[in-house]
Amino acid sequence: MVTRCCLLTGLKTYISLLVPLDEMPTNLPPEAKAKWMKAMNAKTDEEKIAALEEFLSSIPKHKGTENLVHFVRHRIAALRQEIELKQKKEKGSRGGRTIYVEKEGDAQLGVVGLPSSGKSSLLKCLTNANVEPDDVPFTDSQPIPGMFIEDLIYYQLVKFPSLNPFDAESDTNVLAASLARNVDGLIIVLDASSNIEEQVRRIEEIFKGHGILIRRPRALISIKRTVSGGIQVSGSFHGCSIDSVKRLLADYGILNAQVTINGEATLDDVEDALYKNYVYKPSIFLINKVDLIDRGSLAGIELEPRILASLVKCRINRKQLSETILRRLDLIRIYSKNTQMDTYSRKPLIMRRGSTVGDVAKSIHTSLYENFRYARVWRMEDYPNLYKKVGLNYVLDDQNIIEIHS
Image 1 (spheres, rainbow, N blue to C red):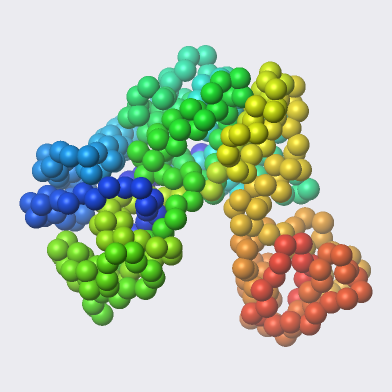
Image 2: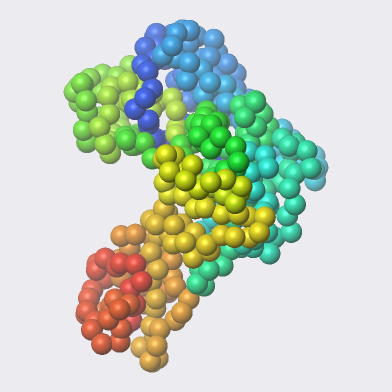
């Protein structure tokens, strides 16, 4: 089922921010900071746009603010598109664009790329979706979902409209970015017969401009605003102290918050995080049309993880793709065994890495968790002989077999 939802609702009480370390300091004056606070507190999309335009006009123009200016412009463009979609919905228009695809299956992945890279061919090879290449590049189109099934794992692939490398704020790029915020990960389809590194650079630039990172950054900053308790900071800094972070947040009127840093961040990174709500999407690079090139030419290209394919001929290693998706999304397969049966279910439960026996019990049925006594856990290679008797907090590994006693 395909539905619409509004994505850009301003800076919420809880912000999860992923910050790359290559940003230059913004050094904004007090006037600009005050206007940003106004944008943060705006209630409606129209108020947000007006406040962001005021903020944009107050940003000093220098090298360190270029990325921030681009980011704010992208947000304004996205908010305007949100207003347009709402108006069409209120008028009962059926011609509006869809910016949300309800998740089905075990994981949802967006299929993205430049025109003629092979997005439609990928869906035709792996799913039963009725999909054809776009007749005219960069025209508005709906996302197209299809189900890729391998080893009884169900991956929902959603073909996005082609990205437009010539206009970062084009409707198709805004639409693709909105869709990307909702998926679990991305499959980036590249054309091996063209400059691969240039394709990646352009795609990365488009998504980054809309607040989405396709490569994991070195620093992850989470800022959770609270009602009391002052500023609590945990994590590693470079070239600054906890007191300087507290003073920075106080300049923005933030007096109570929990700041958590995974990695090593500078004070400029923390300030940058206040403006740019980056979202990291684990990505797989699928290099298509490899039958047209000498594969030795790919040796010097650093893209991981990557899958090689010739999609016109449907030459793609399905099992390799499935395994790569699981690893990239940090997912594991857990096979359940009924106490009354001699064998386990061949359809795995797909869980996050680090999941416990208790998590699995809850996912099957709450009564299994509430009435839990113990569980038997096998490694796949040890079944049916060697097992462990464990409790709710036991952390499971990929391809474990579990029998829950309640």
